[in-house]
Length: 154
Ligand code: ZN
Image 1 (cartoon, rainbow, N blue to C red):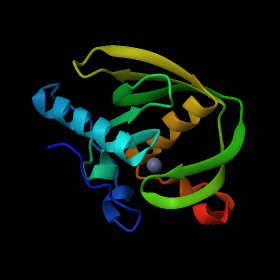
Image 2: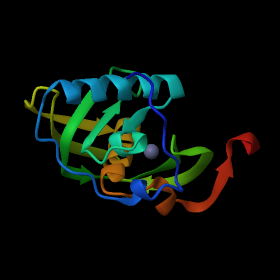
Image 3: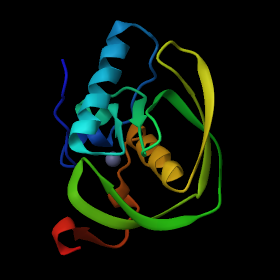
Image 4: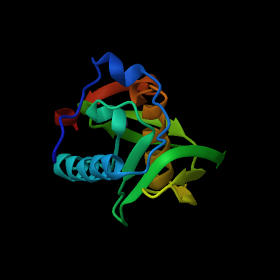
């Protein structure tokens, strides 16, 4: 497969709740590889399966440290608060100020079905919560305080 088309905010699918992954097989691995390639090509920090048209509880994140694959993620804890700029590959070239917890702890499964826990702070927490929202059919534009700004106005 390779690079997939990124769906944009007009698509109703982005507003639907994704379904858990049950099979940790080659179809999932192909999906993860394609999501990774698509995310790097688009220069995003994260990408969720609904963004490429699949309602599955899967996302990938790389905020510059390393790539983490999240399958069936669950939020275990959140605390603190951060307020800052956020964007989304499904809302091209728009940015807005979003308030989120400053720290999050999630449990998820890897590509083989093994459970792991990961804690994120600041940018990582923001990315994890942003991608998690995609699995619930939420977009960052729902949370923006103030105006959405065009990238060209920055
Ligand atoms: Zn997004």
